[in-house]
Amino acid sequence: MWNHHGIVRVPALKLREHPFAEASVSDEVLYGMEVRILGRPSPGWGLVETEYGYRGYAELADVDCREWGVRRWQKSSKYMVVSRGADVFDTPGYRNPCFLSLPRGSRVAFMTCEACAGWTRVRLVDGRSAYMRQGQLRPAPEPFSGNDRLALLRREGELRKRLVEAALSYLHTPYRWGGKTPWGIDCSGLCSMAYLLCGVYIWRDAKIREGYPVREIPVCAVKPGDLLYFPGHMALYTGGLEYVHATGRSGDDGVVVSSLDHRSSNYRADLAESVLCAGTVF
Image (cartoon, rainbow, N blue to C red):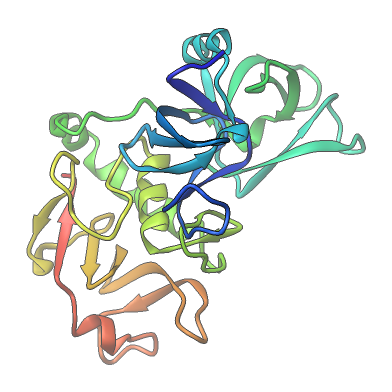
């Protein structure tokens, strides 16, 4: 049955700039995330909008649009994958074959914690029950509203620490244009995933956009967890004049830590000399 909402049922749904398989990827939407389907521009393709307001074209075969399935998923308690990746099994036990591997940030529906050596029983998007390791999951955070700055301020110290930890957890991930998983990620994908893992939706591209919680601040006021913006690039500030970012520069080719300090061995003159502004949600 055609429905205007759907749930991603592949590990990473590719959003493309145009409705055909050869078009550039602009984003990846992770397993268990809800999308709104705005139209069908060509057979098998949909114009979709993500939970965080990003739009692109996706193959509808990768989205579960069954009305009853969407309603059940919306009512379910969700767990989020917090390890780099997590395998899914029919029965608990590492010796059993896994039939699905999910990247960090994916969501599954929680069923029960088993007494069997730290396994959790979950429900998948297609309705099947399966098993995953408890240590690879945690309850999915409720997203903060773009206007709920007081809630962010009340948890500022904790959130800043978690944002830095989340971004650094992608260190050495290969660079991939439009990517947003530990298998490949780009600069805005890294920053938006760090915030998403902490329950905050920011704009997915390397710019500050009205309607999202990031506001511009002077670069001299930047604190750990804030964002740095460059022409066509962005990074997350970690403190001590250092920042973590995903870069396709030869020799880096992935997520690295660079410095604004010209005396440092990881100084990037091209970026340090072109900082446009900083941004914060606090």
